[in-house]
Length: 546
Image 1: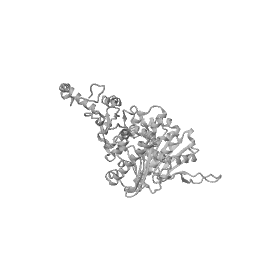
Image 2: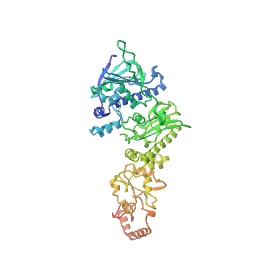
Image 3: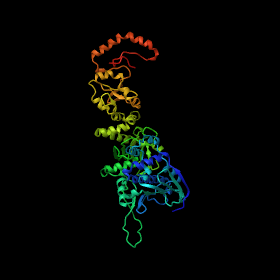
Image 4: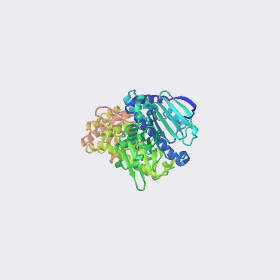
């Protein structure tokens, strides 16, 4: 062991402490995910090195064979995971392993209830990552050196997962990161080759670089221990490059968890390969629940971008419009250059055609979900409906398609549930009805009890009840659907067209004459406080409405 210098003890950020406590106690039913999370991180570190080495080949330090090695020691009760990726400096280790830099942390902490079952779902939404090591280990040692740094600039990070961690500077000959888990006494089942191999096959088969385990050769008495021989236990080929017919649902689901750092299976996915003028593959997922930072429009979002199977960037946001920011997945292009940057992406015409094709693909996937699995779509709408309502304003080309996916509460629907689509509304509209009627307000109770609805109730005409903050803005862009205009029941004079008979129209004209003097007196009394005063036929019980 090399000499340690500049050793110091530092405290975890408060959120980390809470998260650690919660994870250790909530996720015991699914302990084996620690390996999936650590392999996922190692794979990201190798991807980053591969990308940086395109412009700085010296970072490979002569070792271009990139891989992850997992080993164990039954007697010492340890599991070791090693990658030869980008590695960490001392500062990186303190930042990445001692704090959670994710947006929405405080929000996340507010949602914790103390109920372990509920909270373990929340952890999944938040992304577990490195700290999952403490589910099975009572001490974790991390040895790392950043690629390109001197061998004397390695770092040793160590913690028992309680209040603090130690950091020291050490010599480390190879770049990359080695994590040693000292297993808790009840968890020594993981110091076993067969068990580790099964977990890797189950969760990490799709990782696109070799994951190696030592071959288990039987020791012969009296002979020296044979040199360790390693064997690759995963397929090590990029999942999205394989034909769809060969890929099981479980593999798609595990790949989603790796890409999205999510815990739950996705609601739906779409895998596609485009050939011809443009060549690219895409694998897009709809998550089962919303992340904490969904409404922070500046929060990181986007797809993982690969160019000819080489990872280029995380969260490439130029491939989908902002209202689809919840979609996760990868896009792998043959037409972009490897040194593409975010700035270039924003100006590249290839990106525009890919963006419009991928957007259409997501909308098709949602249409299919709505048609074939209405219950699943209901769950999708609960999580992402408000964001979808940003669509008509942002994406003029797909306005009609997005409109068909929107759901609203209505006077004919269940109490406050946003389940009525515009197509369904029109299918049950009254004969002669040539408009889609809606009413906006600040709360559901306010719109439901509005006097503006009285005549519609009397005539049995359905009205959409819009009370989300985004609604007023959304309908200003969504003026019609299937050539039928959307009409607010609270604005302007009310003309029900063919839904009124001649007798009603005559009566209205008579009323307008009868109340002429009263209208003039009210106008005079209110002066400039109102724009206009008129007789209305929308009221059946209330004397007046604004």
